[in-house]
Length: 386
Image 1 (cartoon, rainbow, N blue to C red):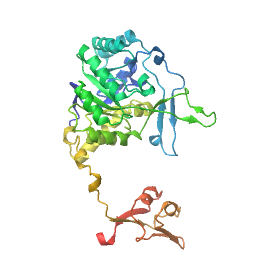
Image 2 (cartoon, rainbow, N blue to C red; image 1 turned 180 degrees about the vertical axis):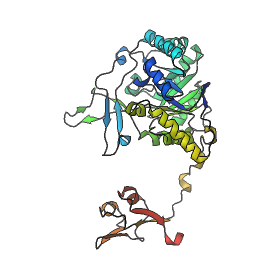
Image 3 (cartoon, rainbow, N blue to C red; image 1 turned 60 degrees about the vertical axis):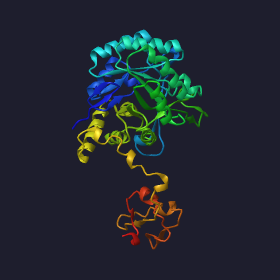
Image 4 (cartoon, rainbow, N blue to C red; image 1 turned 90 degrees about the vertical axis):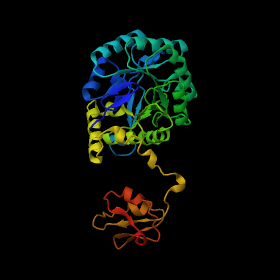
């Protein structure tokens, strides 16, 4: 079974890349990425703005939405840039390239044109395997200033491109108006890969103090909820550009990695899962991907990359026939009454302590089957469709 990919001229043994964050901030942490099975890692971003090199405390909060596991929660963070200045950053990058057995990709975020060019040259000289242009940082100068990020990413790419030879990678924002268009534009400007996406800029409030939480301002937020968003835009972008797509956002398990590749990703970047579970999760992600491939009989990633795109159904062709109807398994039913409460079609009936579904009223929406805590509701074919 082959998991190898080529990304920006780099031959990687698998598609898993650790995204830039505190988990990639030093040589020691980058070594942990490699030991856990990552194919490459993006070093924590070097910022021109000096105040961004120190994070407030605390700068992480797990925002709970409901009572389920952490996989339904939001990682809200104001973890700032690398603590290093440009000279220290490049020295650490050089040490990492000498000691870490995987490609180390640099990441920079600047506010002045001079710094964009200078920092790019410096990380190239320090031995970076490639360079991500982190214009779209969720708490960077451009994201918080309301700039048109797509235009700025293209401008910075065109600015830096003539001054370096190392591969440049454009990291897009999910808050862009139409990411496929921006992906085409950055390809024309010379990027050798597109990352979809950086974390979103968001805000949460403390109802007791009536103030923003943590540091008091906007912050990045991500987590499992982002996967569906990334899948949507990957499938829309796949085939519209010729450079590799690197998916970033929402990964919690190997099945998520498989989904992103099905949607067109060449590589998959991981951050929140490592922050919340440790570096060991990288091995579990790889194992889950291998299990999917074994079950499906795939011997390489190329065999199923982008396969889901051709299976997308246009809105006008969606089958809208009422083929299904809900049915109650009385042996499993715990009489919680939830199905009756949520049915806006008044299809669920309760008589003499037993629940049933009116086939004439039920439209087969599937909500009761989704919510039933006992698995007593299921969708079956209507009689005239059997």
